[in-house]
Image (cartoon, rainbow, N blue to C red; front, side):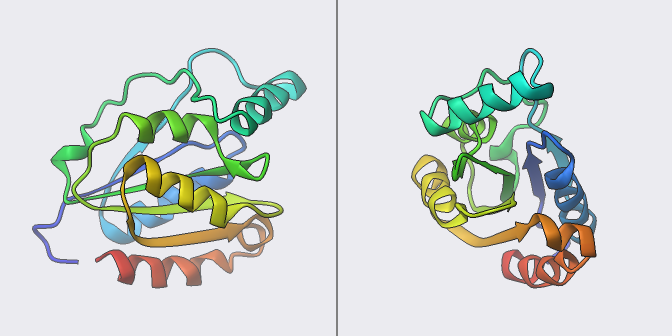
Length: 156
């Protein structure tokens, strides 16, 4: 990536898996990092059910205002978990308000749903320069880092 290219990695992570991937992408690119946070509590079994309900119904979660303006960056990289086989509600809320020059997307998941999520992300914020899907087991065994190398080359 050229030195003049400013990048922002924005992510939501309920369990920490997406955070791990987002931090590695930001480190590799020298990018700024923005966590997409929700208003209220989302922990425990009830939080899990609420997250799944919102995502399956395509309801944007109430999120806190971001501290960084995505339009001030050359590229915005947005990531989040897959919930109920689709885009997570906090990421949906962020993308619905987002203005960016160029975007790329990544997601983390245990089962499936990345293709559908990437399609929804593109509808909300524009076609992605690159996408990357990372399974939970790839995070556990460290193999996700190879995917990040490819992804970083694709967006730079």
